[in-house]
Amino acid sequence: MKNIEIDFFSVQENKPVVEKKEKLNKAEMPVLTGYVSPSGKLVLPARTIAQLDFDIDNTAFKVGKQKGKRKAKSLYMVPESDDQSETFRFTKAAKSSTMLLPIILQNNGVDYTKAKYTFTVNPFDYKETTALELKLTKEDNAPKKPYTGKQRGRKPKIQETPE
Image (cartoon, rainbow, N blue to C red; front, side, top):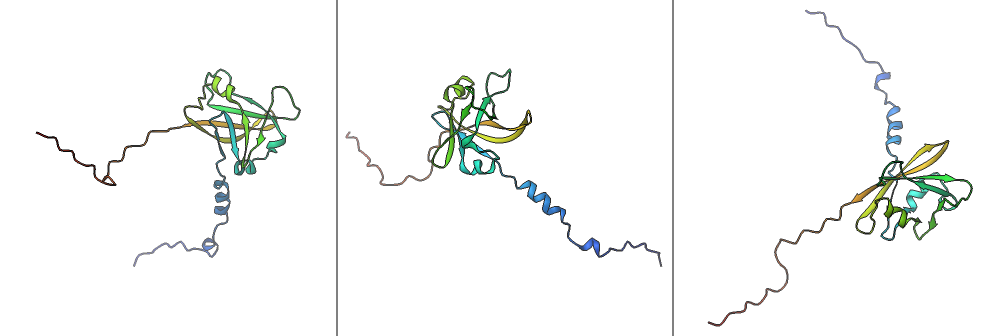
């Protein structure tokens, strides 16, 4: 008979690992979104505002884009403590907060009148403060395909041509 080497399990190896729960909590971070309205307003829904660490209604923001770019793919919002002439504020709407920026958006290549734009909100550190990056994405409004199934309703009358 052969000598078989056996590796035995311990009782500790049969206990569940607690680390998996911690990884799940990190993955549950929701995506914060908003959109650009047809009138040129940046709209942040109430559920997005609730998960941000800002008091949106009482904070003034400096709004900008990346230097050297002609079209804005992202807007950057840096909170300012004192009210300056270069700052913008959110105004309270029914279930959201809005910031009116129509001319700035059009001048930077965001044509909100022809297409719908959405954005994701990502907090980042800027000069020892937490700022927001609004990454813009254009939604495709492809026309609906015509219905090709069975026609509904009455059949059209067939007109006979006299011979």
